[in-house]
Image 1 (cartoon, helix red, strand yellow):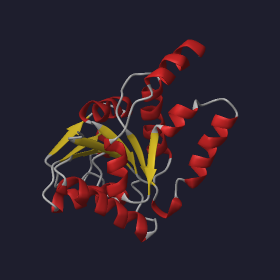
Image 2: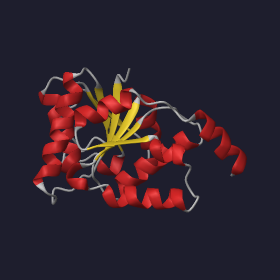
Image 3: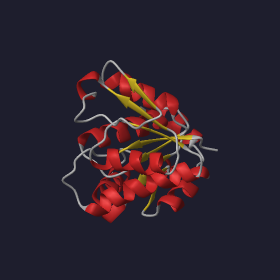
Image 4: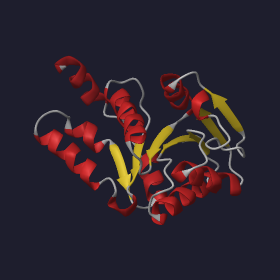
Length: 194
């Protein structure tokens, strides 16, 4: 049972409204299920929307932010708690520590960095938590195709690729994540081969 989910997502306001709506709906869904939201602490873009959705539905939200982003222009002020980490490495470590699972909404370099670090940690056995992609507007299709290509070329084990849950519907994504089975044998094989 996932009691806490860390959401990675973009902070840009200059994106299609569908992305913001999906973020808000995900936050609202998490709150409705009694799942605590852990995220980057921002009030702009999808970050702000996922937090707003959870807060407005009565959910618990914890933001993890770094000092340079902890400003009136960027930091959300309506959260249950805001943790200030010393740097990006500390921020990600704290987010990982507080989460039972991870969801990546659409985003850019920061979101991808958080997503791939989380997937890499699962691949190496550092955690056994589910990782999901909310594929709004088929945003992640090119990335999924790149992952599939990496499997064909032998850089990623099929079990590790299949371990990433993906859905356009947040409720169905959560259901997939609840059924997640960590690929223990693939982790052992990967550690031997690489």
